[in-house]
Length: 196
Image (cartoon, rainbow, N blue to C red; front, side, top):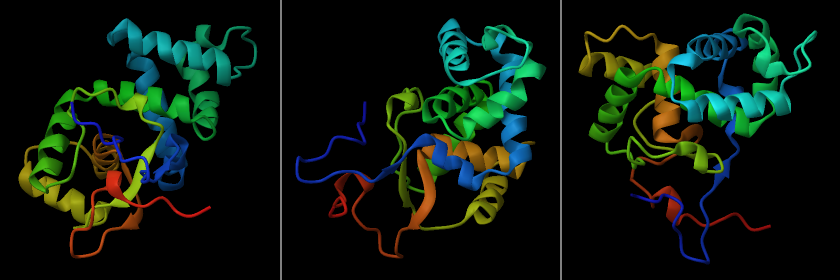
């Protein structure tokens, strides 16, 4: 398996914690992702459910429930969306489950980014094991441009731009924090860490 974090001792990848994604998500979309993930969580393997239940007990407070994980999905969605803004572990678990619930989109986005020559982890890699998102955004477009190119590659896809953009971030493990120059620079794992 490709390991994007294998770097030489004198170099380090620049990463942002998972909850940094909230700077790029509208509140209504965050709530929609959390709600849709919670309502379909029972269809996923037990590992996804147990991780989200454990993090829910740890970070989510649902009024009227001693154990927040026992609250109905629609009741705990809003408190979980609030906790999503603060907990990198909860973000990783929810996005991992959300991506698992959209296997066709995940595969299409993987193929799309591969065609655009992004450096990617294998599709089946456990992205929750990373400490966060890489900050370097490959050249070739913002979310709007990428969505347009995605639609050209997959004209029959029914997914909206928010879902495609979120899947690009999750599959690519990158946030558009620093844009690469026109000439391709070193890949993220070989970039100098900033001086303290």
